[in-house]
Length: 176
Image 1 (cartoon, rainbow, N blue to C red):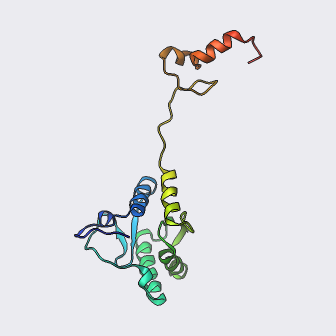
Image 2: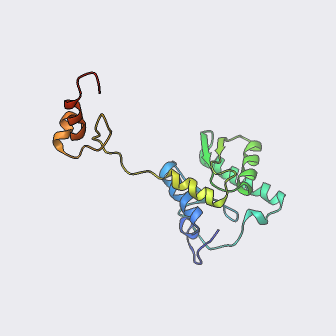
Image 3: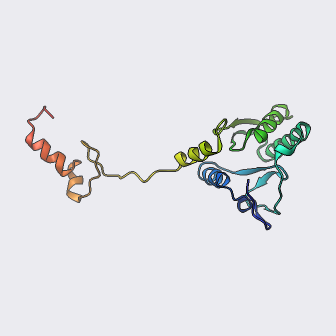
């Protein structure tokens, strides 16, 4: 993951395309968004941090377990006994220790982790985020026959475009 070189809010420190796509999607679709950090555990998006070069891939199994426990405790302190749905866009090296730690956490956090990117390669992950982007706004005035946009004000009065109204005049009732 690419990172910037000077101290800044966590949301701006990470600069890779996948992170940017995940952040944009999370901010648009979730109530809250956090960053899973190998060094800082659970990061608020606006928390100012210095750049670092560390990934959980470099951790031993026991270190990943400790990391997962710290993140689980942080989530538990934020959500307490609420039932939460966690949607994680991180890789398995982050999700697996967190999932294990949540399983053993006492008192338990009622959390369900979803990983919509699980098993996808980098290009597939970027494509997934692209498909999730909202499309163009749907026009409010559509022809009830052909579904074309009704552009003219008088067409809206009939709920049919000019072409479909002409067709209706030419076809006997009950045949089209």
